[in-house]
Amino acid sequence: MAAMQAGEHRLTSDRVISAKDLSLTFQTNDGPVHALKDVNLDVEKGDFVSFIGPSGCGKTTFLRCMADLEHPTGGSITVNGASAQEARRARAYGYVFQAAGLYPWRSIGGNIRLPLEIMGYSKSEQDRRVREVLELVDLAGFEKKFPWQLSGGMQQRASIARALAFDADILLMDEPFGALDEIVRDHLNEQLLSLWERTHKTICFVTHSIPEAVYLSTRIVVMSPRPGRITDVIESPLPRERPLEIRDTPEFIEIAHRVRDGLRAGHGDEV
View (cartoon, rainbow, N blue to C red):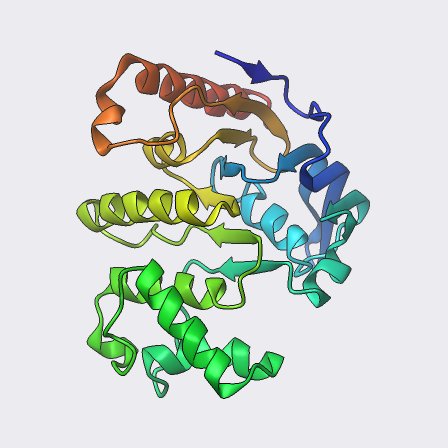
C-alpha cells in the first residue's frame, strides 16, 4: 500500500490546498486551547481527502481554516496558491455544514438560489444552475418543496446542491451525514462518490466514521487528540468505482485496520 509519512508534502503542480506548520490556539477565559499544532498537508486537484480523529481533535477547525472561517495563529495555509481570505473572496469553494442549514421559509429552489442571488447572477442563469444541481443530487422535481417536506437525507442533498450551485472547484464538507441513519448514510455515500466522479471536484470531508472515510477517500488523514496533529496520511489503493460491497474485501479491511491503529496511536500521544 502506497503511503506517506504524516506531514510529508507531495511535490505536484496540481496542489490545491497547502498547509505548512499550521497551528491555531484559541484564547479563552480558562486559558489557551491549542486546537491545531504543526499541521502539514497538501491536497491535490481531484483528491477526495477525509479527516478522521476523536472529537475535539481539530478536524473541523482545520476545515474552517481552509474556508477562512478561523484564522491560524502560526504557520500558513493557501488555497489555489492564494491566502484563504483571497480564496474565500474568489468563491473558490463550497461549504457543507453538519446541519443542512436550509431556510424554512424558502423553497428548496429558493435556498439553492440564495448564494446566486447574492453573487448577482441573472434570473435565467439562476434557473439554469438550480435545475442542473438538483439533477446532480437526484432532487429534480423538488424545487418548489419546502425543507420541512423533505427527509433529513434529502435536506442534506439540497445543502450539497446549494454548495455546488456556483460551481466552485473545491467542496469542503463538515461531517454532513453524521446525524443520519446507516441506510440513508450508505445511500448518500454512494451518491457523493458518483457526484465526485462526474464533477472532478476536490473534496475535503470531515467524519468520525472509519468505514465512511475508507469508502469515500483517495486519501485518509488521521488526526490526534488536541492539540490536533496529523499522525498518518493513508493513500487508498481502492479503485475509484466503489460499490458498497467493496467494504467486505481484504483491501478495505486492511485500510480500516490501519486507520484504527492510527487513532489508537494518536491517543497514546495525547498531552
